[in-house]
Image (cartoon, rainbow, N blue to C red; front, side):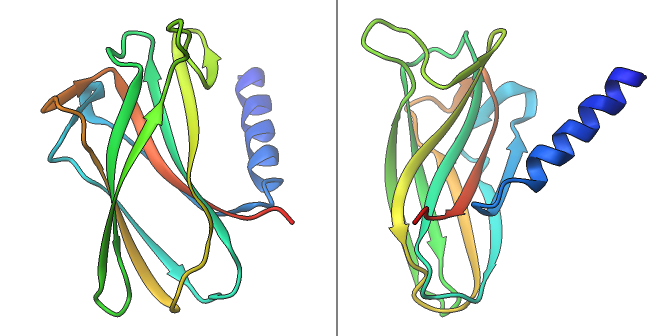
Length: 154
């Protein structure tokens, strides 16, 4: 019980100290198998159209993940009704098969930058969707995934 309290306090402390985060949300992948029809959805309220932001893709998988990479479609629904779709390719291991990212046992955490110093063109609520775009209908060994938007460092 004492260790649980300490871990909780430390987690709150580190999250509160993350000054660069504008938005971050991760979603658990049911049964650790990401079906291509399961789009992750995020709503982000934006007022500031002058500040540049970095967009990062969070991916947590285990060592049994069968590929060295990951493709996803990133859908942006603008407040004015316009829609944009990007295809993003993420490298998850080096040439020798060693997993990139942060390791905790057999779990690997990746935070992959895919948009650098982007500005929101208009204020309002943006809706984002992340859709796995691998060539497998049910992609195994993916624990959770999400979106992080952070202020760029000056």
